[in-house]
Length: 254
Ligand code: PGA
Image: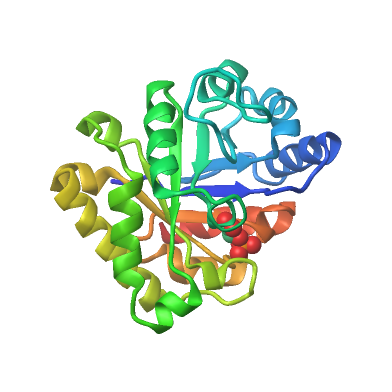
């Protein structure tokens, strides 16, 4: 039984005050999350205030990136050790915007995932094809390359904690969502790949989230599918009503 995860990726939005107001708003609007594991991902500047505001609540907090080294001369970077020190529990790794704008490679993702695990952070590893890759029927090849390159060797107990987010790049922030059939096809492929990489039992425990223009009105149709175990939500996670609506859909569907 996989508990569905609804994770909000706030990207580079929200001042400290706005961020704290948003998590308090979610808690007020939805005192109990039902079946879902709820995670929010504020920018680094608001992480600690949001962690403080979420203490004793059901909401977990994710960073949006990390460095793989514990410390060192890496100007502008934040390590997994520091995230853990802050009380962070999750970390988004390899988001397509980091791959696209900050040249993040599968090798960097691999090191970050290994470091996150070492520090007891749950990595949310993002993968997904671009529009031209899909049009050229390269989707499965891209998924294989990103998972094969991005996941380090892990013992099964650690591997079970992994969260994978399938986010077709053409669906992110565009209002275009993969159809339930398109999404389920790739999710099933990812689970099969994880089963070969680890083992069937481990793959069965790993949550695979869908991301890309998830909204309250399309969430239920995606979240009810057998291999879709939650959502990574960008735009719709920035408002209480829409995020709470998606969490509600996980309760019904997941
Ligand atoms: P979106 O973003 O929901 O705004 O499409 C998803 C993401 O980038 O994680």
